[in-house]
Image (tube, rainbow, N blue to C red; front, side, top):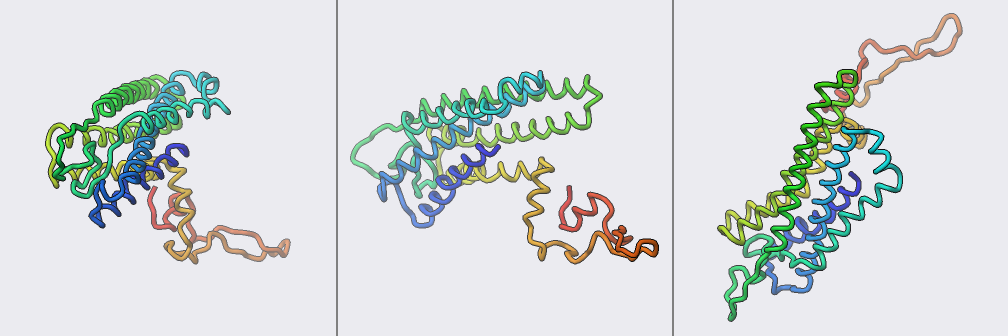
Length: 285
């Protein structure tokens, strides 16, 4: 999850901040071709590594559902870092060997043709054949792994009634995260296919650009929405002055007649449950 978050930050820089600046300033590829090319390569690295990381995440959950001891053998300790070399290697391959997409405010979109809507003296052909088909094949693999994970989850929930409440909720959370990643990662590839080979206009380019930017912004919201532990940790970061009823105390102190010291006693007006405690922050579960 942490590794995926780092890649998400890289994608936010190239896909959101740089693209937003170039759109507002009406910059094209010719404004800074070297810079635009490098940013496109960085974006290709982030997307390729995210795609493989999502496949590894779904595969890890499949193995854990099938045999928990096998998960310890394959992913425990330093072995996790060895597995992470796979998405890093594929990201570097996309970065150095595949033609990157470059941004143009005339789209506005990330396109294979750097001279999109610009009259040039030659008619060069720019395409993303290998980029599209290779990533589309990996998306199909990710969908197959997520489908396998969903089937294993249903089988686990149906037959294993002893750990239904704990195991089912945990794996349901991971399955939802994997499915959401699968849908989000499909947007850039399918959007590139649409703009390069089907139809490109101001409306379609803007829709594809916004959805690609959401691909780098929504994963953190998905984590917060489906993971209760992460959600509670985020709530702890909220300043006390922004919380609802920040001055309400959970305990009051009374003097014991027998021992003469203060004993903490629950206040009848204080929240008595985890739900009430979360209500102090104005958030629901």
